[in-house]
Image (tube, rainbow over all chains, first blue to last red; front, side):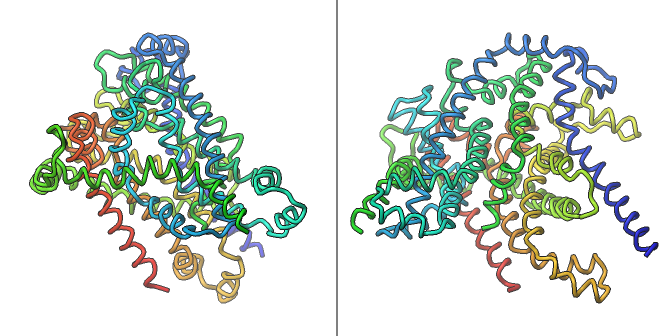
Length: 278
Length: 286
């Protein structure tokens, strides 16, 4: 018995001896982001090894603001991500509900086509999307252009369909016998029951929109509708730019997401693994 | 019954409308464009200007080669690492599980632009913390941005850092769905943990690992932001230009939509082939 607990102790120690350094390596770039964001440019480009934060964060934010109106870009990003998330959860819930609980002509075709798009490279659609939105609809630099084309989301629909199809049918049939309309059944019974799934989906969608780079880069070049990743990306690679400022911007872009992640870790992970475990 | 049909179409309609306009039509449209010379007005059917050019364009072969090198090295390294992370995270002996999960998963929520900027600074030749740390243990500084092999390694390191935890979480959820009693007989027969892992756990995990491999290959094949922002538009001198970046340059920097569409469809064909290959590998054992 004694040798058993001893071998357990050794196993536990070696497990932590592997995982702790690995975790520290993984956290290192995030830690350095904070360190850089609080250092003056003269400190970043200095031969000394600095591993602890300094006190220049506010100055760096001011430098960043001098290079690009980042606070405004953050607000655009937030507005776009929030609107996108609400609309996308609503649309995918409605579609997922239809695919889960009704039989109709063309249903299996719709499901097959949606599934087929999962492995399709985004580059196949982004070129015509750009031509259509920017040249034909003349919608470049508008909120509609930023929000509407990304609304199609195949994983979201499959995710919601899964949640709705697991609910007991009796529940909805009973309501139908009472004469409740299909829309009322969806809004009053099904949606409230699907709340945890919707929360997980909403977090993933918000994150995707908040970090989205390629589409906003193509479609919004004016400062008035420029999102934060595009604004920050436009500074990376410039010759005369405050790197402390860029790092402060990276922190401002990352911090809210990390906070949401810490608060809602369970939903996040549920959302990520749901795509995989059927 | 008839009314219920109508309700179903009503629920689907807004989503399908967006799907049709912004996905189905573009899929068809870029296929047509891939056979058109879009640099003349009006666009004319001329596959020689797109597909014909693609097969003799050294820049295409360079981007294809770079993408393949990244795929072949990065995906196996990352999936192996993710599997190790998942197995260790699944250990009942582990303390502070949440902290470790946070450490490995946090990079996934960090935006590409933010992490690209940090990696650029960290790997700076003269002032980057990585070279300073290498020097302090006696390894000469590496010019991460001006030598192709080093720049490729940097991209592989960056992408692995960002996505290993994501795959680890998926593999972990697969590990947790393996019932305990599968191991009981083996433990009674004193089969070692390592053997249990190889002969019981890995075969059961195979479908989920194949899923991760397919997702990672398709993701890495479209690699664009990292070579654009970290290695400064595919530098040094196209040494890290990927298919995604090549397409971006052709399609959006030079507005050559037809040519870019043929590159996009090349990626689509590769994605389909790779998915089929992986599905075939995944099924064989059953």
